[in-house]
Image (tube, rainbow, N blue to C red; front, side, top):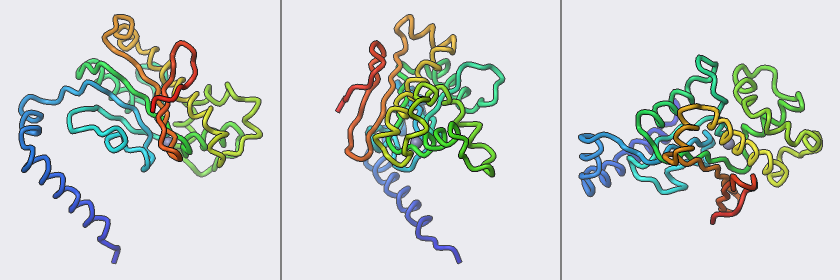
Length: 218
Ligand SMILES: [Zn+2]
């Protein structure tokens, strides 16, 4: 008999959510359900269990339209291409919800980036059917560090930091290949942000899009 403890914890969690958002602050969901959502922010984060954007950035319901995938990657613009899930979310977030900010949130010790490094070294697990194809979106990020990639100890967070950050910067430049994103950015109706969280010390770093370097935000 499988344990029900995790199921019971989730149901108790929903009861807590109900007590706070429906009993104490009923007006929030009343407005979100009658008027609809109008989130000002879209966030692309990693599926990693340690980097829930709502917890890390203290979002409330209605604040952020979120996509999470392995290694928070965004493919370059390719209509009818193989990665339509994330592209459909981008299209809906930008063209229908009309968000004014897109945040790509990367993080330290990212398993997806480890997979990308293994792929570059050709030491990836052969029996994985989807991972290599997905993380290969970030191939250019490892190519920029091609000379170091062979020596990198993938379990050393300091060694993988640059590749994680470069992958975030690559996703930001890939965002600009979508014509309806580039057009809004040029008219200052949309701002792109590349962020990276250091999980070991609890720091948030941001991409300076002029210098191409990451700077500590807090
Ligand atoms: Zn990750």
